[in-house]
Image (tube, rainbow, N blue to C red; front, side, top):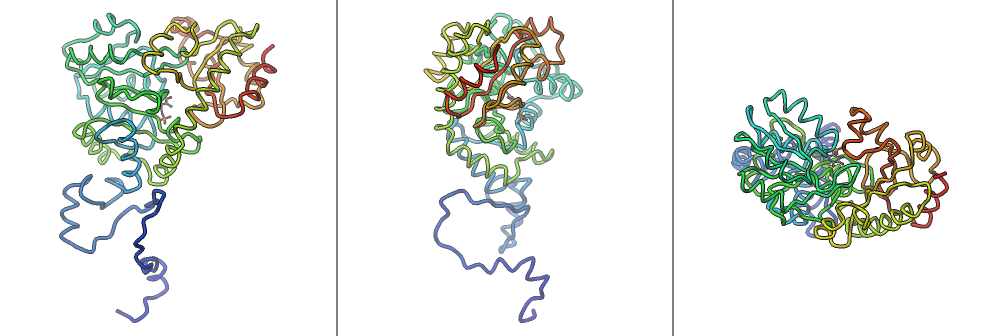
Length: 392
Ligand SMILES: *Cc1c(COP(=O)(O)O)cnc(C)c1O
């Protein structure tokens, strides 16, 4: 070895000369590294065999920053383990492909995120997995939909855009009796509001893009549950490559630190905004589980206590009125996504539910003038004033 390594050698490896620090960082460090260097070659071989436990070898297998996020999400959900993906759909697809084989059947809530409907209709259908959907509130219909091939019962805690609440205790009992794995997408109810594993769900997933990340600056997904199922999901992710990136995990972990504060404020704002809209003469209907008028209010109170989330919908009249509202808001912004600090509004009939006919939309309670709101943390007086000036 030359006394002083060359410029290029130092450019790639020089930073390793940093002296060891004995103090620990107070915030999760970002291990923005694709691979890990082994001083002990026996160790290299043994970590290569274990892949997701016992050490770090390559970031598609495991990365310390991503594991740090998995650890905190597990502790919030009361789960043994968590797998982290590049998006919510990554987590949902990873979960379902890990649980299902060709010939298997899924019973799913009819009220599902569009992307999840899409996954069932395309990639899972091509893989030979069939699905039957039923109204999530109609437990007899859910139970009737089971066949001897049913392996998974799938639902969302709160459905979009009517904010229908799933009775996850009752659904878990059905899944248990039918020996199926119960998977819950709890994106609308982050773990400070509801922990489905405590209600006997087997796996809980989130789009971390929404409340967990919480700032609209990252896409991510997580799925939590028992060690064995999560290890199987992570091994599938090693082969298919949809893991969350270290920087994204770092952003989500940063967001999670303020989850309780954000959700507290968001729930207060949403309740106040829902009440103001309910009193407004131009609004014919408001759908928010926290309102007495919501059909699932009693169930929401049982599951959620007095925090009903940040998602609401209201009927502004006809389709033109719904679109006009979006044009007129100044503080709220017309944008897809949800769960961030900023209030976002969408017109589902022309943006998120366009694959359905007006009749199909009506059948799920989605009216043409409906506006969906993801309530943020702005000052409530500003939000109410903005909504009032945007309504006729
Ligand atoms: C956004 C969302 C997803 C998909 O998450 P991505 O991070 O966009 O992939 C899944 N389920 C629900 C309920 C969502 O709101």
